[in-house]
Image (cartoon, rainbow, N blue to C red; front, side, top):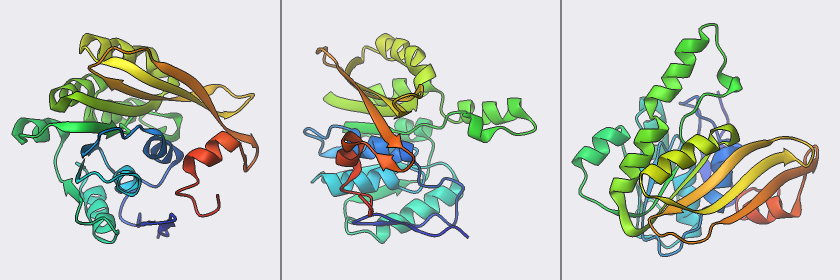
Length: 236
């Protein structure tokens, strides 16, 4: 049984689901800009981690979350109810496609740590494993549906594998979303770029582009990383 993950201001129970607390979610939750974000949507919330981080970071009146997986949905609801921000957090048990078809809302900020295939999910039937992740919410649909639900000045932010960055940028361009911020993430100075943190809007402004290195050596974190996540991790 998985132990709860303790952050400074909230607890993530993760015993019901295989979706555990990971660096990607923490990075996105800490990194995303929250300017004028009063209504927020977290697509594919898992345990509710990112939504809870945004509740801690902001005064947003409404933070909605979506989760299709039964066990993860139940876990997110539990984590929301046990937090200090239960009155601002709500989880919908639905796919993004179903939600978009039924909801009459527009959001100032939409965030997603989308499901994607990585080497960590290799199985005996690699093709089936890959398709399960890609079919759950393809990038194309994530971008199209997010564009529909954004306010005119709304923002859309994701963390994805670096190798998918070019494809993702082409898809956002087709949907008239402009890159405003981009941070490429490396585990260490000498390692390859692994992740891309990206924030978009319908407003064409020069993009801020930089790089984040997490560690100088094993469990020795860079000042930039510590500054980014220190409001959350107990040991930082």
